[in-house]
Length: 72
Image 1 (cartoon, rainbow, N blue to C red):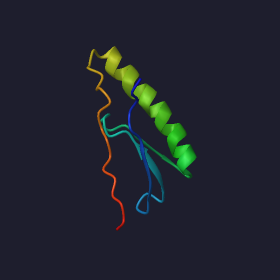
Image 2 (image 1 turned 30 degrees about the horizontal axis):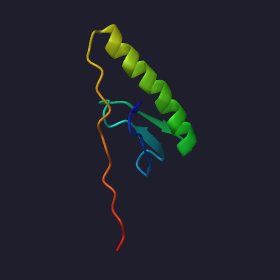
Image 3 (image 1 turned 45 degrees about the horizontal axis):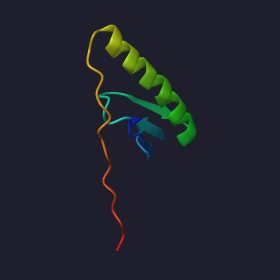
């Protein structure tokens, strides 16, 4: 089964780690560590999907694939 791609990065502006799911608009979370940001994001993902189902909104199919760049 395919699942959603997750980005985790440090934000100087937020002074925290940010985790997001590009396929789910607005689904993101903050944490003091990458691990805590991921744990919060998993809760946010569940809430986003539950709200979409409750409101009869479509659930996006996982499709996002990041670009990989290799230093040359």
